[in-house]
Length: 238
Image (cartoon, rainbow, N blue to C red; front, top):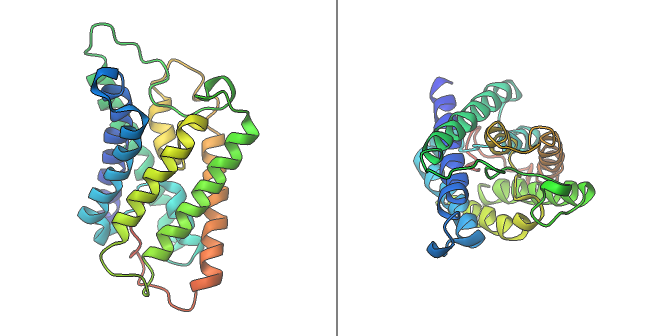
């Protein structure tokens, strides 16, 4: 179990450090041309790389919503859930802290939103709470469904991390203007502690919506593929 938890810690650290780092560091310089397309790709690549690196150890969740969805689908023991969620959140906070130390080394640094998620005034496009809840729940639900389906026994072997990483990239391309893309409560929590906004006050939404979506996605997959479950811990994800 310790190896699984270590894998989840490092995987979540990598996702937050590189994904949010692409927004905090690289996207802060328009001349680099990274834009939100580059940020979306960065998040997708973190999942691809870490799923291949440690997915065979922990299942490569790196996301409390994914762990919940996998557990709901019967693909991991519920007893492992709390440990996974704790190390994912800790990994995200440590990654955000390291990122903050690096970013604050710039003379004119201001944390600002610090790659956080938000609704209303904190939404990039000023979308209302209901819009943000719906898009986060829907996208997380489909994300979980795709994760479970692409790691199913009938799916082509070895390609799941690519499919999952591309799915996360696509999710970011659609949802960055709405919520700055969460679909991952740990990712939202880590950076919220360092923002100069009310990101912590809005954090509840980015736990609730992904968890609701994860449960629905896990149940939807289970209703279609329950006849052929994979071994426990065999599902790589965010």
